[in-house]
Length: 417
Image (tube, one colour):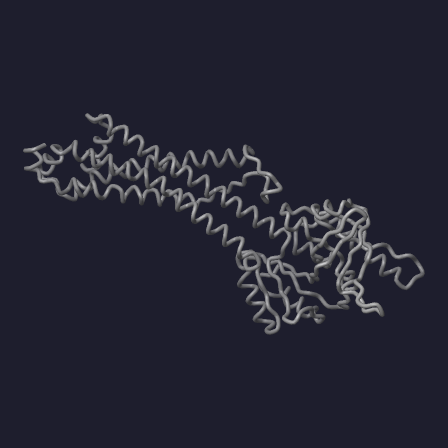
């Protein structure tokens, strides 16, 4: 053990003549502890919120969307095969997108209509109820078989978001009318297209924007009511690694060339995730100020200790201690204070995060927030960055007092100390 570490430890353990210095030391440790703990809890909650939001979005949206300039396109089978054969792609499915009106006996509401292929969509979007998809597929197959026979055709099925179904006042098994602006031209003018559907299922993503606006029907039914023949709006793609989605989207678009273009899930939700990232960074900076206040306490403690230990420093210098050794003694003492506070903060923060994760102490109103429970996700990298930032701030706080101690003149210190 070096003598600097030995003396620094003795200074830390010994009872100072002025109890005020001891009190400030305790407050310094407590300040660092509270700052680190608050940072860990807040960053863990924000990371959990971001992760939960990401999983909810990807439960409704695909990882990559491929479309074509100029609108819908019909020659999509070769394109679909090319996309599915691209490295990193797990599955792909065609879709149709349009805005429609839905009318029930008790309500009327606008909706975002998605025409889907029940056979392949569940491999791309995992939030669907298999029973609802099977009903849509069975009804379509039954109607196709009855088309050339003199038999009444069943009403096609539709899947609604729970909030949309609630605003329309319908339940599973009820009948609604779908109204599209892409109607027909008659002698009396333009007439919107209208078709009756049976609600075969409801879905809930946990996000009001989706649950209150989305409606899914069979892609063939969408083509008929929108007069699109065999055309589609685009192709939805699921990739093996969501963080490689951008590179895969660029690869697909470059391989197909103009007029095709592709966007990944991060580009489609860029504003939302950019806002979350900015908020997380700002909160980190704001809460770091708590540690900064504690660092000022550390500096105050060391300055007063330098004033108290003037004779000790003079004697050490007279015995041959260098300025560098004196500086190291006080830096080590300040770093020990910071280290103890950081370790306590990490432990307390981790314990509170664990309690918040397993016990739902805080419930959020579902009509205001996307989630009803406080999400917590504690990541090792975040903990490391917070602890490192705390130690760096504590180190910087020790530099000035340690420098002043090393500059003391031993003769003057002994004479006037």
